[in-house]
Image 1: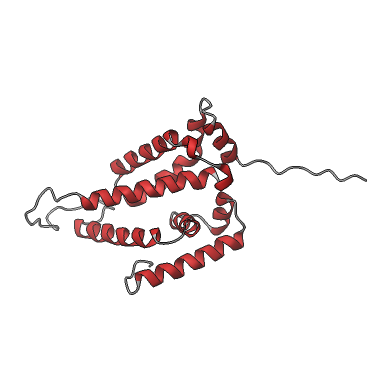
Image 2: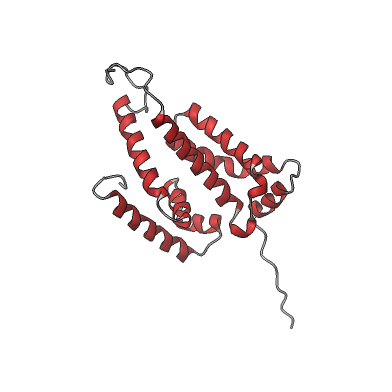
Length: 194
């Protein structure tokens, strides 16, 4: 009786990562098809649709221009792309907050009626400030904790995060607990963690 050992199937993002680094035709398209829904979800939660579209485009432009920097031994392609997305979102938020006001005079925030499902202007401003504080606190965490928390924030279960980052489920749980504990310490009484 001989036991045959079968090799586990290779993850699609691992294959795409090597194809991308080798500059193979349609590799970027494959990466986009695989990961753009997640990147879109991240961007859309942070920005209105038009800005989110620009962010997604910028992310995949960076994936293409930085393809030679991807190193499979340091992590999965998905984690690498999502880190680029997270950084691009953070940069966009910072740039928006650094821009001078276009209208320096006082604006009646309640004058414009929001469309259905859209937050009122004052709510949007509060949410933007809250998001910025949370992003700054998350940036103070180590990279592995950041990756886990960003994926959890965007709706992935711990099992899905484990598969996506190619780490054991127990590791995901440990990183999540450690990251949330550190965030609570950094944010203090600010009610940003819901």
